[in-house]
Image (cartoon, rainbow, N blue to C red; front, side, top):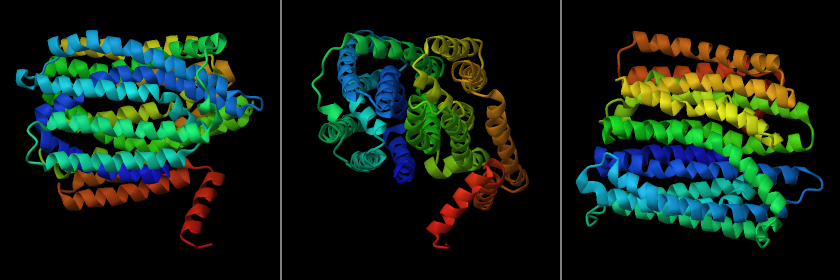
Length: 494
């Protein structure tokens, strides 16, 4: 169900991105990206609490004598409190920064402020509903998660087409941002009603429990370091690009983000289904099974990105030309480097889940989160020295590799993860698959003339060779048999 949702979302997202770029123009597209991104910087604050709520709910459900009502009740109070604090920050410091510091054309300041306010309201609604969304995932009702996602995509497509082809709309950016907000409100309202009717813990009246409140807030507080680092790495760097280069480079960053999010979404869906199992296996003290899930999850999430990344890396110019027609400067290099950042980062996803499952994250977040935060000051330094904008991605790759090493060292100490096993089963494996998958497409790119024939040849050969490399080099015998038997069953060959 998650992959049906993802495939549908990918097709619609790629189409609507082109329509939105043409509809808004480069400057308004850049404004939407950087202003909405500024709010989403704070939205990542909710990721800390979402991770906390999801971890504690899933942990309680994995225990025989768990009490999810106690967790959910405290989570509601925490998120409402945070929503009030963040609203105050948005309407004071945030509003001042938007109107005083951001590089936006004077005649578009009104539109930028509308985008800002609708983004704030969307964030606050989503933040308040985090406990309900976490309950859906903790109970592994991923079919509901997928169906709601498909509904959101259809609604977004309708809105884009309506705004793009309505001649009576004078300011398309303003109308688009308001209608986009309505989708968030409707989807979150659905989650609220669904969870209240299906899960007993979601029917509880919020009650203050000092012990639970303190435990969850402590976990979220330390987890906030990592989320703040993510803010600085993503939208913080996007803000730096705006200050140094203006909205045109933000438009290129927005295009790269769209492509990257589409590809990474395949791995994210896989992790959404896998993460509850890692946490529950830790709660049940089934460490052998947890280690197996971690190694397998790292490998297959990497393969899911690699499968699409290779043809994208080889034919970036052609794909952007067909998709967008004309595209902003730096879009090609941004797309390529963004995908490389994601390939490095995705290896760590199961490690992060396992670390969170322990509940002991203080030292981990201080070390790894602190290192991850260095993306921002190092990027600022290099941009100040006159380096081109794509240097921020190269810095992110280097920092990502260092963070992966630190995570492995922490997990070896915390839960007894075997570094030798991870190196052999994951790192060596994915390196071998990547090399074998890239050789033929690279040769074709260097020897064939630019155009449709080269694109189709690289696409088909890449998909075939990557699939075979994953199947015969990237999978263990049992995994390979499982996949082959599954394909045979789907094709009614058995």
